[in-house]
Image 1: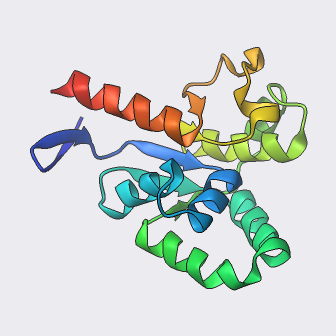
Image 2 (image 1 turned 90 degrees about the vertical axis):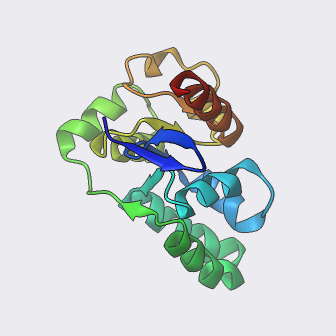
Image 3 (image 1 turned 45 degrees about the vertical axis):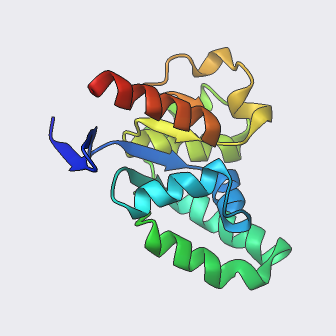
Length: 161
């Protein structure tokens, strides 16, 4: 597995972190929270950040409703953090996600994380994704908050040293 050296720390340069809408919204409105720190890791090229077309559209809708003045800042954050947009998932992947989540919008987001083969999915959705949902146990990646991801990532760095 190729490693990327930065400041004498070796990390997997292909680590894919999928962000959902709640994380992006948090990053837009706070410069000090964990969500923004994750974007800074992406900006530094340390991790690879991903969203899907559904997440991008959902974020646009949220900003249009709640914070239209933030749209320019959001576009700048996406660019600086080098966030990539994955392909739209095929129906088979969407069905797989729907078998784990009854709520269609969250299933669509989960399908987007599956299609890019994420290593971690970051979300603040406590209702459907985070609060001990046993249906998510077959996922090939963990799902957690920005803080959960940062702890997981730090542990990963410690193991690689």
